[in-house]
Length: 280
Image 1: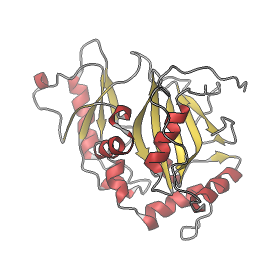
Image 2: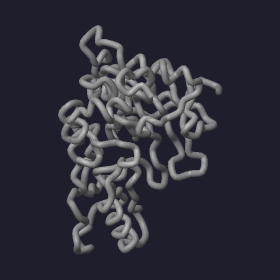
Image 3: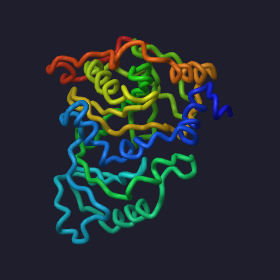
């Protein structure tokens, strides 16, 4: 590994973890604090509504009267969330045990993701966006020096068919993920893509790299989170050359004030998704 003079995307992420350590990453990785940054930069309409935050769930269950369905998440980590559905009995005993495990652990230690250890351990309760029973697709936009170069799309969350595809701005598939399953379908190009790119480039204009994770519901994008060290830098791509090509984007200097994509008109990005003409 070339830690001091990185060449690949993977090495640059290790460099960011162990050498660069931008102090801004702590607040922007925190699921609670990041919402203020997102709202200030792009507007509250692209922020998932928050019902409640705190260091522990309210001790009296009768006070947990949030409008269902909603998600309970750990603000200091990833993949630590559970859904309380619209109908049925809430299994609070199971939820409380899960939440206590989240609060007792520091996320990211195994991968050296130092920023998570400095985030206050808290819980956030968010509105569940999207149709009941169907989780919205993920669109993870890879932003280098304020410009979106790739989109990693994921679909069928919580299903055996879960997987994704990586596309560029022209919606072609230049390479694939080896670490994560390739989905059988090619992603539809969302009508809200211009708005999504504007959001991601606005949020990422001050950083050499950030992955902006978005959902699209009824044509409106919502920012899920900002990720600065995805997969802790151990994401494997095919062909191998892609890792070097991405690494070159970390070094690319700014040639203009970014974001390069202007803010779309207010009526754009709010219609439903359309199918893709690609056959893969």
